[in-house]
Image (cartoon, rainbow, N blue to C red; front, side, top):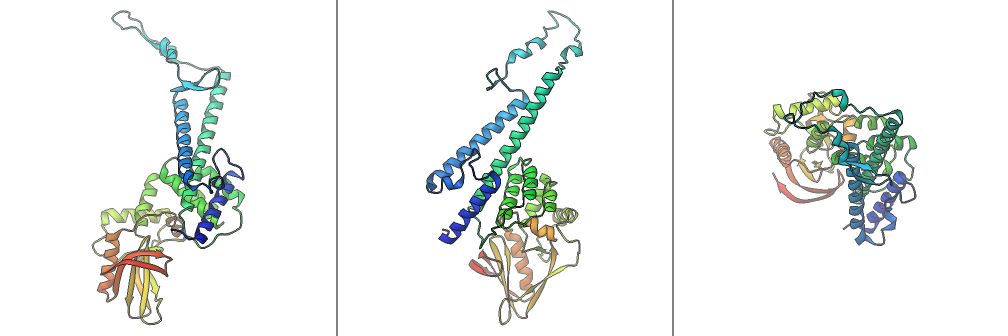
Length: 350
């Protein structure tokens, strides 16, 4: 359970996210401070809000596809099937009549075309607004579970926020919305975490790109992937992914690169390699350890930090086995805390 200090920091971050995105008002959704004194209702209210957003998005799809329409009162109703009656043709056995394709052509007049264009524009604008609202709710949920020591008092740059809204509003899939939510949380907590250039780059990602980053993020040992993991890597599987990351500018292209770990102990060597909630604790002689690596670029470190997940245990065991062959003592276990300090639990000696 979170202590009072972290709970207070989380509440402050949640409020700042809400004010940044929706202003001081409720913006059709209940602001977090409105429910803070009634925590039991919060999950139920947020579920109702998401359900309402989902319903509205479904009706927008029906309007766009012609399954629903506006009646004279301005309400959205099921489309009138009688409109298609004029296109019904009698069976050719009863009546043989040549069909003129031009008879099927329905060209609206200018006024009708303008009304349709306005409707399409309104549908698009509302869809983007609902996407941002859904991402805002996701950002709130992320902030409620975030472990962090502090946050800046500086406001988010207006130009940055506008660019974020333009990109996030077009995110439809849950994985993309989760990505933009994490970007927002980072920026509200520490303005300047993600540059305008990074936002533009993130907006170009495809679903295949996101999946590749997600897979490799399970191998992230704090800014690099260890190349010395005997028996784990498969050339036909991992090499195309690494090549794709190099092309995206996330992975350094130096095939002979290495990362040097410095000891954190006064005597002998001790270092921690953390991968999400798991870690390798390495002990031995000397003051430093050079590890063959595929380092992330600066952009790569920024992007991979946005992806949460679980470590690939098979990979960690392979890395630990390689280090053990070099004469180091290695333990693997759960890690809670920062990269260099924290709680190491459920450990197993390799």
